Length: 260
Image 1 (cartoon, rainbow, N blue to C red):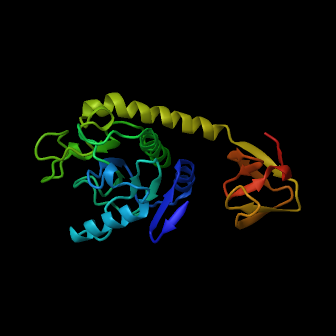
Image 2 (cartoon, rainbow, N blue to C red):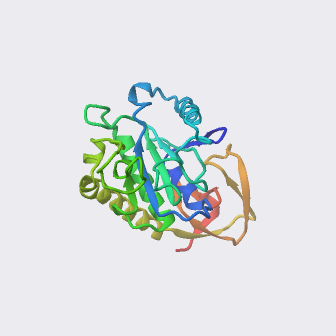
């Protein structure tokens, strides 16, 4: 995880942990999917923060209070938190107050960028995690495209009227309601099922050490973020190279007894 100012850049696992722990009081009923068009793949040179700052400057010039999107997904699959999720985005007129805006870096109109496999995985994953977080059933009524809303009225027209092509005429098979229902929504449903299965497989453990350090990352050199005491019960969410991840941080597995 990396930070520059308000921007937080993370991988998929870090994003899941961050979102599922995040407190959001705003009611969320819609997940917006967009493409940036510009910047696109030719502008991406592992310069995540540079592009984020550039997008914010562009949005400020257009009269926005800050960067318009809550989340940005890059061609390499990394994910950035931009505008706080507690704040409504400036993404789709008529769909912002209860929405979260995802901007996918690239031009995904026909003839534009060919989406990378890592970005595909992250787009599906992010939508599924947000559905999990906000208890949404993936459908064309909860996961929406900019193309489906009239730019002048803000009403959903499913592509009729004055619209943008966003998130692209080649975005997961197309930008129509029919394409989303056939190609995009099933992928999110499957990913959500996998997330739910993983969560139900959480193990329980009992701390054996008198004091057990909690670390930010699975390493003895990582920052200590807290402690457990002997006989404390913990939930084991993940395992990596001799370490267990709990809801509060990483602990050395040698000092935790798995009990179920």
